Length: 142
Image (tube, rainbow, N blue to C red; front, side, top):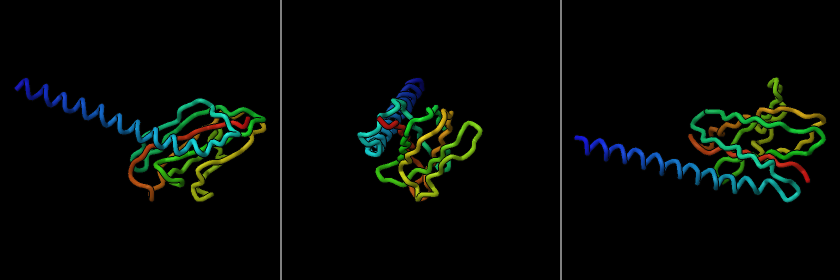
């Protein structure tokens, strides 16, 4: 009996490890696709905004964006544009941008007059599938 438990435990452990590797690989591919939207005129903020989403889950990311700077937020899931819905709010949850108003545009360029603590929500477009890796990249103009 003890041997069966050990083997079963090892199978569960290895399946969790390999499924985690698959998720990381999926997110890496999505990040590569998304990085195409951060053109050479932008520098990355160096942060890693990623989340594995299932069904109607919403990921929430926080960032401080500085006044007088032009930013680009790129949002992707999967290999094609338009699979991720993202919304940008200020800290009081006043909506600043919603890409659903622009056919799920994969990025948005904007300049802020003053520094803002932001909340960025991301969720899968229901037409895109039941699960996926959400990747957000933030760049600022050189």
